[in-house]
View 1 (cartoon, rainbow, N blue to C red):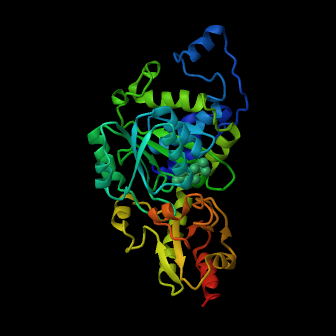
View 2 (cartoon, rainbow, N blue to C red; view 1 turned 45 degrees about the vertical axis):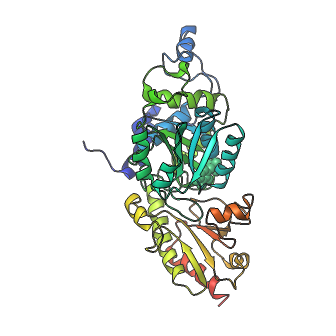
Length: 414
Ligand SMILES: *Cc1c(COP(=O)(O)O)cnc(C)c1O
């Protein structure tokens, strides 16, 4: 049988992959922290990794494993590991794989909290070059003999720069570098990080994958593209079994078990329910975003619109190549100089003024004064963030209602 489509697989994933008991179509939520064995040898075998199983739910539980199976299947990976939040997935991955003296090439257009985490890593002695990932030449120029990895987001927030992940992936493959991609903005089916040769894919499950603004989570998937035998930071004790699992084993032991940001079983269940409609929600949000961006671009009271689906976006050609399922649902705008962006936001009636993105509801906020406030004006300028920028995370509402809300708010200042 040929491989079924993404939407079919996401809806049937739980019963197909996890085979819940008693004919249930969902894996039931397991609240047990501890697990009992038939005999003492049973717990010894699981502890020593000879037999798969759960011993203590900080490291693994049936509920979280069930979600991991589903996400791994949808990403086409060799394994997935969930965390309490997207930031927990990112920090655990970096802290468990890299050491003092390693060099990383990192996108200069990063989610603010991830950028702040990079500062912490530098305090610990990891060297980082921040580069313009829209151009693979900038990545190549930053290479040093101690470079271990490249890290980028696919479409940056809020200015929507599109990384040339495909070219970066080819370069990393040639050089034997680990490529870590934060795919939160363009989860499958929009962009397959595995096909772009990423080694590890990070997703904030809180955003599009769960989609309803009611649960936090994060995940890291190993795509199977990277040969961990060439990565000198894997501890000898974790170089056991299939080399394809070495990276995740180290992240699981050092990053999840030792650091402890475990996803709660009930959260795993909520995320798996949200995930069933991922493709449908994304399709609708992307359609809405393109319509809204087109409307805003032509409005006299709007100075600039940033959206990869617009023909005059600087990386529109890359977006067309990489994002075959839609251009994502984040757009930003600058209103004309005579309008105070805060006053403008106050005129929106349907759109909610809130941080967060990837929600069913359309959200907007003033970027410089909130999520990028801590970065200061100079770094904001380097990231291309104007002081008046408004970010919009486009939801699944009826398109005409969204356009009408922006139209009436802009008309207020006409
Ligand atoms: C929100 C976000 C994260 C962090 O996810 P949380 O689940 O909120 O911790 C990481 N990367 C990107 C690109 C994000 O948008």
